[in-house]
Length: 535
Ligand SMILES: Cc1ncc(C[n+]2csc(CCOP(=O)(O)OP(=O)(O)O)c2C)c(N)n1
Image 1 (cartoon, rainbow, N blue to C red):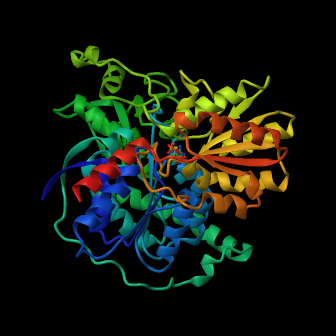
Image 2: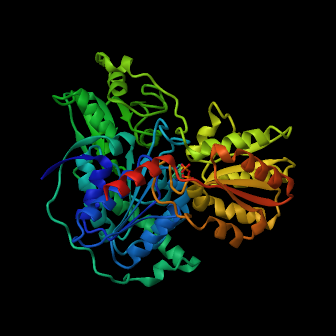
Image 3: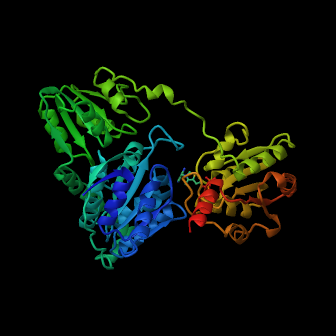
């Protein structure tokens, strides 16, 4: 059966068809639609075998829960955006050491060009770093097919698989041939060798040896994968190494087939035998095309003899940073540019802004006015809709680094003598990684005012459940914040004086203060009202 699917949806549907039992995720563009699609399918098919599909507190908890599901012999996926890999990294790297029982597929969606991210790190490095094989689809069809193969591979080799996609793969649609049957979920079973799951040094040393040895097997598997292939061309002197979606872009420019050699890479570790095959053809110039950082280009530099000219992002034949496009690939191949789309001139870019009616607006209005009453106020912020407080008309914040950093940076600044030191963090970001920093503040009695701007959802990524909803005051007091200094306000224009007064009082308090402006996100409010009306 054919379906028109986003790459994310193809991955999700394949996971369902492959008998996945657990889906653990933290939202993040461009990965969010994988989990949402599975949740929608579950609702649509109440008679289908149940899949445990939930948003988690952060990517690390997601990764660990999936590993636990795998330990029990069942199939699990973990979904996150690329920077989520940093949060999940401890569990991810060590999951290579324990290995898997049920198939475990970690899906990292990278965001080159940083459409909605702080950086454009390349998750393939994590695969290499952890010695975990990486699958990288070049089309939505491959994305669909690869998930099932990744589960099978994971169960055969007892190792997690990292499936790496990038924005355009995740967020563009293509026709995909999908199965009409759903594989039954695995029954529970315990791992064959329970010792390897206890990473005490003696066990770890043994496992590390196995893991290093297995790299050869993984490479042989990469070689046997028909999606990794060398396709010779008429011109033997030139070859393009096209990885993941770059293969798609390349072939889009050569619909009749490339007149030069193409080494297609969809799976890592790189099969060096195919590189040797390419060299044996008599190639004199190799161009590497890959989304993200020059991972393969650097590997190629070590594999190719010095008389072969190697080009790619590092040599600036392709842009050093940002997404590849069919046009940038075309330019690198020396082809005439295609005529620009008329629509390109019609679409005017708009800076993002907080929605009209958003509670963060009222919070910033009050905070800016209070902050201006002190000579040297500093406002450390975090990642979420409220990061838009950096832009006009508010220009309120002085930092945004990684999830949770607002609280700990405000603490560090206060330690250095900053007064007043404010942190602004969202409810989801607070439970994701702010809670631990708050404990540091409490333990050091830091002089900080922490504003948890609670819109009762994970707004930035489209309004997913927020794990702290209804629990924030209890979490803060449980961590040791004096309940007298946990203050809840309603961010509405009519309450402006009360909010400002609350902030002033908490600045005057020498210790940890938490102010929680709480009002539902205007977008989820609209959605919920509509749902209520329709029911
Ligand atoms: C490690 C990591 N995971 C996920 C994201 C994507 N992301 C950015 S902000 C955010 C949560 C925002 O929710 P919240 O803190 O409640 O603020 P809101 O957007 O609702 O104002 C998410 C999931 C990210 N940037 N980094």
